[in-house]
Amino acid sequence: MRDYIGQIAEYFEREKRVLDSIDKAALSEVMNVLEKARLDGRQIFIMGNGGSGATASHYCCDFNKGISIHKDKRYRMICLNDNIPTMMAYANDTAYDEVFVGPLQNFYNEGDVVIGISGSGNSGNVVKAMEWAKAHGAVTIALTGYNGGKLKQIAEYGVHVPVDDMQITEDLHMTLDHCMMKILCKG
Image 1 (cartoon, rainbow, N blue to C red):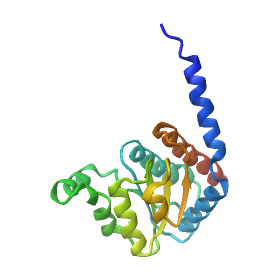
Image 2: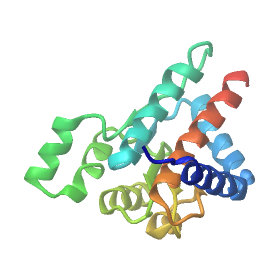
Image 3: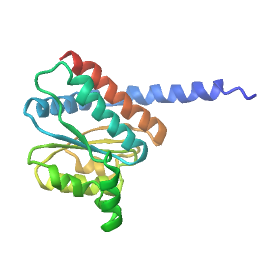
Image 4: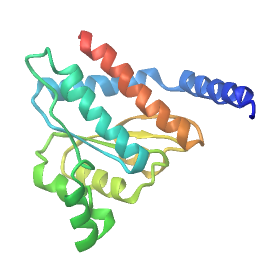
């Protein structure tokens, strides 16, 4: 049996350093945007691929139920990667880059919020949906890692996890969700 304690400690230390470097003012700004959307009755669309897709789905659960359950005005968050048949129809019949922008076009109303999650910031289908959203008057938010990629440049608001490590980026995107949930449940 191998002793992994040193490697575990190294991973945790790196994650703590990156967590400490996240722009807390940017997170506060994102929280204010989301609260305004809730109070104004706006929809919030969220999307990602792979681990970021799982994170997007988790955000929906936490905002739609966890934060909203005891509020008169509730969050209206829709995860664009949760409808697999629709995604596959767009991927098969048009292109994989259309899997988010197509459904977004069906449900979006001007002024809604669109959140893109991409560790690299360069996921083509997320970038395309965010470009469309921005061109149609959406409030755009990016959750990114690495150097932020195209998504960081497109979005009006965002929280960047400044590390070239997908697993730490994805870990901390979930930490942001739970941080917001804890705080917004009280507000």
